[in-house]
Length: 397
Ligand code: AMP
Image (tube, rainbow, N blue to C red; front, side, top):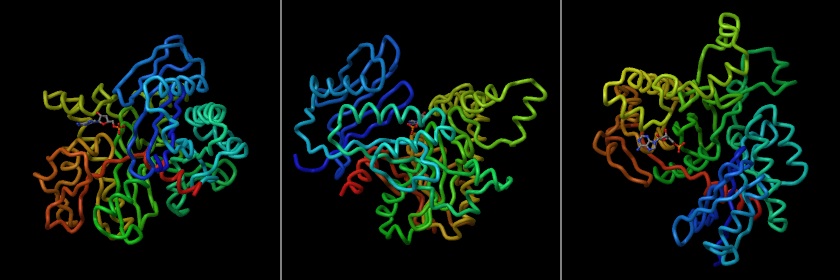
């Protein structure tokens, strides 16, 4: 087969997601997930032409996880040799100020990702493990790192600066970076296609609402503002993250309750958000409990929607002219109620959701605004793997 394919890799601390992606169509003939790396009972669940197959075994590290993935391709297909695999594309989380575009992985690049570990202490080490394992197993292929922060490197200083002593930024990199950039890049291009306008002339507010969630103001294809900051904790209410809180909260909890900084960090990242308010981080569960009249779930939904609405209003003002408000991610693509609730009553701003269109379930990009709405409202499914494959192919030419 002659179309270029990329093996897209997303390495977590104990997991490895891989997908062979046709960079031209986004189709994936084979993919899988290795879980519990480093434990005695690892598994790989592989999707190939025969459907799903599962291999159990002990996988010590990411290099072995790649061996198992290769074994899965050999055993269950498709055979990698049947495809024109031109690169390995790595999802990399934090590129700091160093990376504003995808890069070919070299030793200098891995050193730089290592230097950025203080900014992403969980993610960057896992990404490095994945890169090292893949480089060992695929020494002859170019490896491309695509950073989640890169898309937001177009933010101007007034948007990325915190109002703290300037030396914090210049000496320690304390500033807003933003995340979900691969998704925003994919969705902004797909949205312009849906609207039939050139990306360079299209202004968008894109809400990526998944388990993690953030919103971005995108002016002519360039990110000008986004809700996540130095870390992915800032901004919207998420599955287990609080999003915005008073920055004095840490000091207060430490002083009054004696909690350590690590405990507070853990509570805000893992026990807050929907989970904190409703006891459930899965949005479907929150909706179900809310339907049953559960008070916590009702509050969680209301806080979630209210926060989102505040950001939409703020980003409307940042952009001045908005062509479309776009929803993506598991919640954004599926929860019609979130879309309608977040935008209800905004007709004076030219925003009007069509109730019927909004309720239609579909996996394709679509408009859900009424004909009279000056600002389009759209649902655009994201595809971060395709975006990584495309960026990798663009880079290597
Ligand atoms: P993601 O991280 O993009 O995979 O999104 C995961 C989130 O999407 C979880 O909170 C899911 O509960 C939520 N989600 C998936 N499907 C639906 C649905 N049909 N309705 C509401 N939320 C959904």
